[in-house]
View (cartoon, helix red, strand yellow):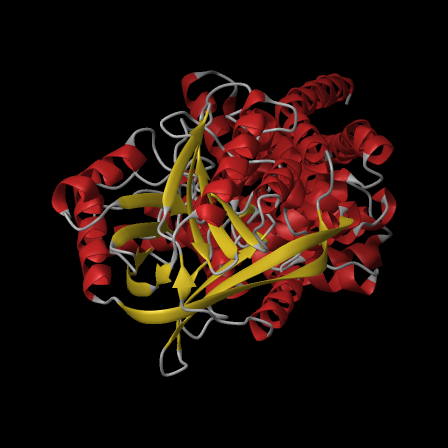
Length: 636
């Protein structure tokens, strides 16, 4: 990936699953109670039981004045929004209400601290409270517009529920109605008991007057205008260059956070382009006809992040095989990310068709290693087909472009090979440093190095001696997790022996490797296992590990010595597991929807611009809105 794409991938660290609506509500009420204890003072008491009673009363007041609006917003927002044609769900509504409550508590707590150390007094606290209510209205308006794709006026109705509920409670329990003339004496006699309940409220609320509600209405209108301006300015580049709305991206992201929906994939699908990709299968079968191992190589990229699109492709591919599955990384970059996880089914169907067409042979060649420039390739022939593993280690490299891989595989076939599994070992990178992160692009020197190495490997395999094939396998799920840079497939090893030459292929379910670790693996195997002649280590490039951080590479979070020891043990186990097998290769093509040429870069650039420039623009809009709010405050 490029540096720009790596920044986009870094957004995956924000992906999490929100709790259910009742969990959010429970936490909101607890937070409100704690805020009540801090904000309200129901008097002092000396006896222990009286102090408990006083704290309980303060907590109840916090629940009533802060928690009740949150409950009303949590329950009512989704219903009102859906009635108006929106898509807000109960989980999203509760999460939104909880976040807004946190914003209010932070505003009010900060104002209370300021009022204690300055002569501003209690009135300042409620001035800030009004600003907080306007702010959460603006925030809710942005989210509702994004999630439900509603217009500003329509979205304002469900977005205002939490603010209006707080304002109504404040109006009734502050006694503000006493400043107003509401109907005649008869009407006042009936309404006053319900609209004026200051005698049941904390004395702090008595400083609230009509000017606070005037300020609330004015600032809410100002902030809503700011939201509209912000959205239009941010959205324009997306609509012009990609034909989609930034709100669609935000809606998908919120949906994935709140409930794990696939709305983000729906957004990616709008960007997608049709592509035809080879899906190659290498199968090893025991003498009794059962499958011992299967290599499955779809020429796509397992991204973009987490389990979105093809991010969890290696694990899903691995479930397809009867024998031990090996899903290494193909020569494809982020432009060949699948837009939805549904596209993986198309890949799996093509892999099944290829598997059904395989014809098996006992003949194979010993492995050969060739080098051209920076590119090193370990190759082995199976009948008239070949397995090629390419690496730029000890140099640093990331993804190899689709076109480069096609050219290299074609160059290998010119020597007389049929089907070729060309694997990008993806095993040495220096994280997210540098301008291009070692991306191997068409026309680069590295691309010609790979093509030349593939051609030489094909020539050597065609003329190599043949012998009967033995295969041994081993795997371990490992004690590590995606947080440690290791996916659910763990470490898998395949060992082949042909004509007394033994080769080990080590596949780690991770996204690239820390610099130098690949070479340490090869040195360790060479030192500890005398029977071994050649070895190579690969990663699957699974993006399930990137829900933690964008460069969570193998070796970054785990102990190197433990990793090396486990690999050596598995290789020894695979050597002991060797038995006579036959092998065969077949390839099918799959029509899938991928991100498309340059779309990933464009999307990454726009998303990163929203993150970087959007923050500055939002700050500018907020400052402008607050400046106007201050002016309105002094005028009212």
